[in-house]
Length: 544
Image (cartoon, rainbow, N blue to C red; front, side, top):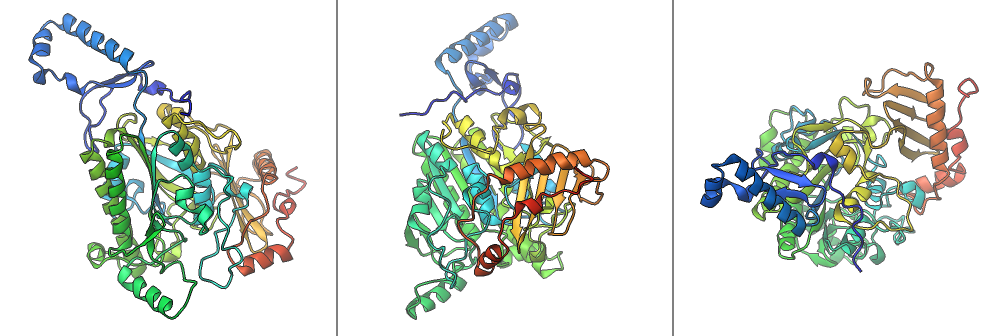
C-alpha cells in the first residue's frame, strides 16, 4: 500500500518566476510553479529550437496566449512535481571553519563551495550530540538519542568490554531510510555505520537496500596497512578484531578493498547513483565518510597540496578533507551525467564539531568535539537543490539534524510512523521563506561525563550553558557572542530560569542507557547513582 502524499505541497516561495540552474554553475532557462502542478520547467520552449514557435513569437500577445495554454495543459497532466532524490553527506569530526564556504583560508574545498554557493548555507545548524554515535542515531531516527537509551557511543568491537556487543539503536526506532523505502525510494548507505554490529541492526535490516562500508565507529584508511594486520591476527586464531582493521563489506559480504578509504566510499557512492538511475524510482543516499576522523592518514598527492601548512596534524587533516571534497565532486559529476542533479536535494554537514587536538578548527566557536559549547554541536551545513532553492542564500535561524526526518518525509510524500513522537520539524517552508521554524523553541545538547552532565540549550538568540558539576548556569546572546564569552545570566535571570526549566522537563523523557562506551563510564554511572538530573538543573534561589 502506497503512503499518502498529503504533505507534498509546493513551497509558496516557488510560485514565482525564476531562473533555476541546469547544473552547479550558472542559472539557465525559465521555470514556473503553480499550486496544482508544482514546478514546470520550460527549457523545451526555447524558440531557436522550434521555428513554428519562433514565428508565433513575432506576435507577442499571441505568443503569451500560446505559452499560457501550454502551461495549462501540462498543469492538467502533471498533478504533482517529481519527488526529489535525496543525498545526505556526512563528514566525521569536521571543524566548523574547515570548509571554504565557512571561511577556511588554508583548506581548499572547491566542490563543496560550489554547491554551497549555489544553494543555502545554514549558519546555525546543530546536531543532537557532540559525539559520533548518538549524533547519527538522532539524525536517522528523528529523535534525541537520550530518549531511547543511546547517550553514549557504542563500545568499540574487539575489546574485553564485550557485554554490549549485541546492542544498537533499538529496532523499535523506524529510521528515515525505512520510511523512504516504503514510499518507493531506492535507498543506500555508504561508509560508517556505528549504529550496531548485531544482525538485527545491520543497515540492510534498517531500511537500506544497499550498504557498502563498515559497521564500527572508525577505520584505518589504507588497506595495505590494515589488511595485513587483520590477516595476521586471523591466522593466529583471533576471533575478535579491532573495528579499525576489519574488512569492508557489501550487503553482508566481505570485500577486498584496494583504494584509500575516502576514495573507495566516493567510488561506491557513484556506483549507487548510477544503479539508481536504472531503477526508474527516486533514491535516498546516506554517504557517511569517516574522514577526517582519526587516525590522521592522507595520500601523498593530497598532502603535497598543503605544504603551506606547517603543523603536521593540520596538514594531514587538510588533505583528508580535500579527499572528501574530491569525492563529492565526483558524485556531483555522476548526478549531472545522469540528468539527476537538478531534482536532487543534497544535504552536507558534520556529525559533530571538529576535534581540536586532531587538526580541526572550529573558530570562532568555543571548544570542539565532545563539548556542549557551540564548537561541539554546531556544524557546517548546506542544502543544494537547483529546482527549488535559490542560490547564494544564508539561513541564520537555528535548525537541527532532527529536522531531516520530517522534512525528507514531506518532500518524498511519505507517511511518518504514527507510533513515534518526533523531535524535529519539517523546515522546508521556513527554509523557502527565510522565516524561523522554531520561534521560542529550544534545541538541546546533553553529554554525560564522569558523574555529571554538561548541557547546552539554544533558543532563538539565546544560549544557556552548564559546564561541570560545580559550574553555574551561564547565558549568552549567541547572535552577537559566538565565542560564548560574555555571560548575561545575571542580567536576564528570567530567561535562564525558563530555559533551564524547559530542559529539566525534557530530561524526564530520557531512559536508562542501554549501553556504556567502556567499563569506566558504566562503573561511574552506577557508583554516583546517575543521572541525578535534579542537581544538573538546580538554580539558586535568586534566579527562582
